[in-house]
Image (tube, rainbow, N blue to C red; front, side):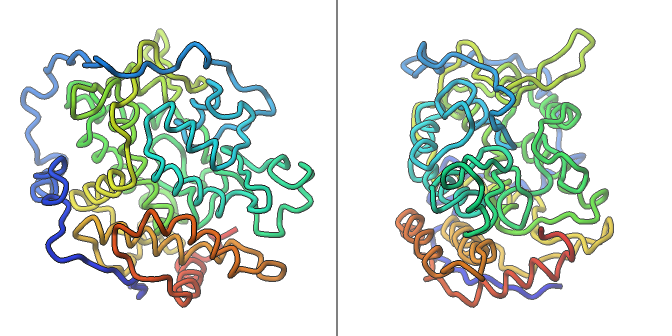
Length: 410
């Protein structure tokens, strides 16, 4: 077992179920709900509820009609960002900055500015160009660099865009994207979408949290069994788990848990999954559904951390990697979080420990880049009481990334 422990600050008495009642009951019982052992009686026969959208904001508005991406427009692994760009909430080019991400995700999905600011900071640090403050929501693009020439691309590390597969943010076992080992890790694969959809059949066809957990668990197990280079470590695995709840929490028509309905019509539109006359699906550009209303309250950093904890405590999402062969999974020796504060600190530590390995140490003041990143995310994580940044974690994490899966890093 790889011995790599991230320090955690566990706040006594603050647990996911006591501090956040919306998630109460899940962590304590879900371990008994493994697929094959749960009763689906009456679930598949439910009549789809009508979404309660009274008083909610309809999206898109008249100023943001759909426009399919052109040949030079960047689109990538995040269906929500793709939809926002296709409707002009983000620049249609797909070349964006943090302020645009914060504004667009709030307008389109009512994502909280704390969560979007953290996600944008991570994207810029791992996939963008800190000199310009720009990153691509798809693949590498010279337009993110100074003067749009690409000449400065490697000065602060490789600005490969969100498509770039590494130990950073684009990871394996995605809901609808193939693992990087198989080639295209950023385009929606209809077969994977159908696999996720099939898990909703026992829940009235709704993309609720339990079928999303089932789908995520199945994808992880499939990657272990088929991808010799399967890599499931913080940071990418944690971010992937956070996104796993988005079909319910952000793509639902209305507020999930308060009358919102995460049905096929809404979710398929955001994933760009269009059903054909013969019942198969094909990929089309992502868009907001017709007559769709965003959630009433912001989806915040605390909300996504609570969702990640819920996933981790109800299924086996242990971190680790295959050791160069299928079914050779080596677990990572890391303390399991039992509350929201602990989960948040794992996330923060993973960001802090991974970021230096993406800078070019020959020409970069790594300390200044880290200071910029930490100063951006620190205010949002202060509420969780996490320990201060320890530079030694960066060296340990870099060694882990290289030694656990030789050849995985690019």
